[in-house]
Length: 88
Image 1 (cartoon, helix red, strand yellow):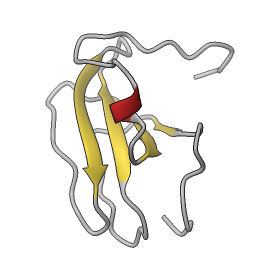
Image 2: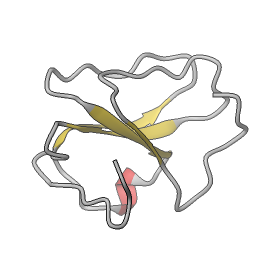
Image 3: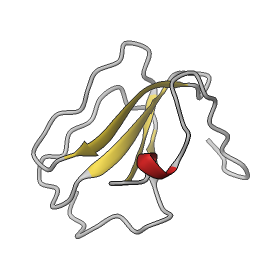
Image 4: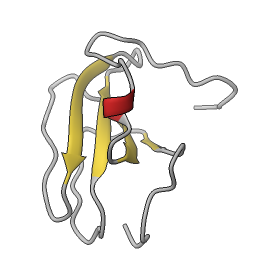
C-alpha cells in the first residue's frame, strides 16, 4: 500500500498474515499463501486493486509478488519455499 509498483524480481513476505487485500493499491499482485512449514497452500494470480484475496485455512504468511510472476514459475500447491539467508 502506498507504493506505485512492486519492482520486478522483488516480493514482500508478510508474517504473520492469514489474508490480504489490495485496498488503496494502484497495481495488481500475485500472491503465494504459506502454512507454518512454509509450504504453499494457495496461489492467486493478478489480484486487482480494491479486492480481497482468497482465504486458505492453513495460511500463516503470504508473499506478495509483481503481477505476472507466477506465470513465469512452476510453483504449485505443496511446494516448499526456502528463505535463504533471511531471519524470521
